[in-house]
Length: 194
Image (cartoon, rainbow, N blue to C red; front, side):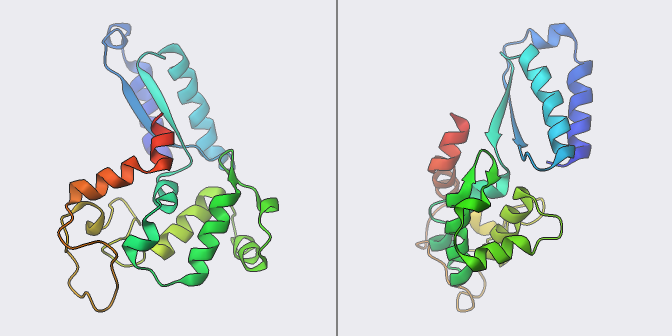
């Protein structure tokens, strides 16, 4: 979620009348909670203040970032058919080291993974998670880069034009709804929603 959107959201929420907040509607906010990005954290703290006042209507989902949902998806490697063994192994080490919305580098013993993490100019948990997710979903069909997910995440199979170039671990005929259902029923998303 970018800072501009967050600022606009805060302004709209603050301008809402008390009568608006008496309505029974509930608002679930999917907000990137990354403690090592101070711009985002300042806006998050403002949102928490509003959520405390309107706790019946505003629920802030406890997630690191959207890419973390994809990275932690149990079928990511199987579905995308990625062959990047070094990145697959790195993914496992990084996921095991995530604690309290941060990557605990002390929990990583592998030298190559530590070198990868130290290679970021402006290191943050969010940047690392986004970078490794992009590498594991690099083809257009599975991409999660930018504002839209690749078609393989949400359209019926098979949308790929050239099946020989990239492998795919999904059985032909799986619907987009079924794929999204499996993604959102996975353990990490279930934990966030609870």
